[in-house]
Length: 238
Image (cartoon, rainbow, N blue to C red):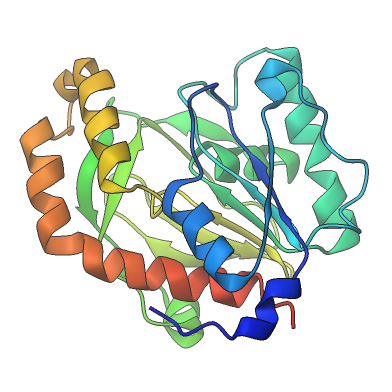
């Protein structure tokens, strides 16, 4: 864990966008708090408005959810369009899973399922690209919970790849980042996902619930350290 200085307590809040009433920013929220950021939590699916500017925020994080970035829901279309705000203002932005797919859609890319129906639900290998390796060390295994992926938008830099879903992490411009995998889950969150998402374990490529929890014992420490370093890189406000 990075040792964040006390002077960081004056930092601006980070906008947190969640997609369910019971969703939590989890470990990402905990790390941002340790960095000195308050959390401004909005849930557009419940009618919360998103700000017209991020001048008063250190940046934004858009999390995942059970919906698809391709769904024809007004709040999803509005949220995808809203991503032009951090992009135009060059504000720090991180999209996680659905959030990354929304960023791809905003940038003109496509979101799609695997041609053979494969899902990534559980722990899977990650391989940093040359650009990713130059940026920072990456974990060898990451936690996934999705059955759609995305192509790489024009102008984006691929940072990490996977097997069934090649594009796992990318950077666009100076301050926009997207990751397909999940580094935000606390142990309580993983238990909840394993119970509520058990019906998905029958999908091709998905792992059974016990493998999720056993894998956490082996791989989560490295993922937690990476998530901390990654957030410090993105939200580097002095």
